[in-house]
Image (cartoon, rainbow, N blue to C red; front, side, top):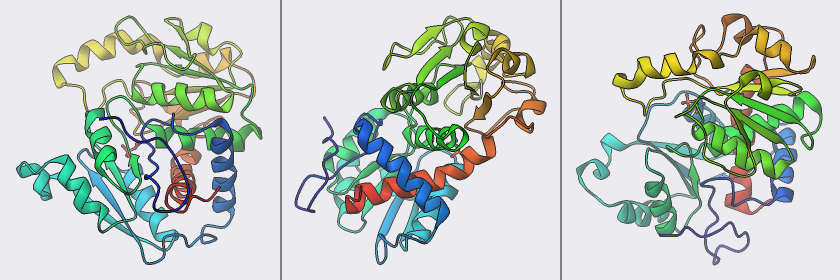
Length: 307
Ligand code: CP
């Protein structure tokens, strides 16, 4: 089923969703990031969710996403309702369609972390409240919002920046490519054969991490073995991705002002060195905090239609 596109306005209109980031225009993304900075400066400035509940469905583990959504909904005056799939009737065969219809009668928005993107699309197609993708196999758009917010803070602008992602061309890389393009950021993805991102949103694809890093404003990496990858393929992944480690030499190839980013959780010594992870040039812990500020601005936009 095709989800409805982002449309804002009276509640009689179809719900707006945030599934891939492609629902946003460049202007709306810029406005959302402006608003996120305001909410970071004044965490209790918006009470848009007073008396309202946001369902947060987790079919996969999470630290940052759960904590940032729970605290963010609370700061907006609402109640975050965490639903683990094993505790829902979904685990006993109730359909996504029926789950969407029931949740829509109770909550102002639904966040979902799951595997297949089809699940999120089906939820959105049947929900009458906004659905937010909190991570799927192919997309992690909430992470990309926080990443762009972090770059805005670090450089005071986004247009014209170059971000080089090195490592597994995964859901995080895809969302960076989609939302980075909207923001005017050149996204380069360096990955080995078999781990390359599919062509998306004008991202520059290469297998050469040094070439990607040269002249970049930001270097970004993610774990080599994600929660969706099997133990059997872990060793092969580590071997293939070893040349793509984010270390000091790679940072030295980027601009002197370049920053290091990682969506976390990190495995120091694998995809990133400990020196870079905790060093002077990282903005990684800002990224983790910015999940909350960016998602609060997103919730405002989706639930209240606030620009
Ligand atoms: N980056 C991220 O999504 O972290 P969690 O898996 O801990 O939510």
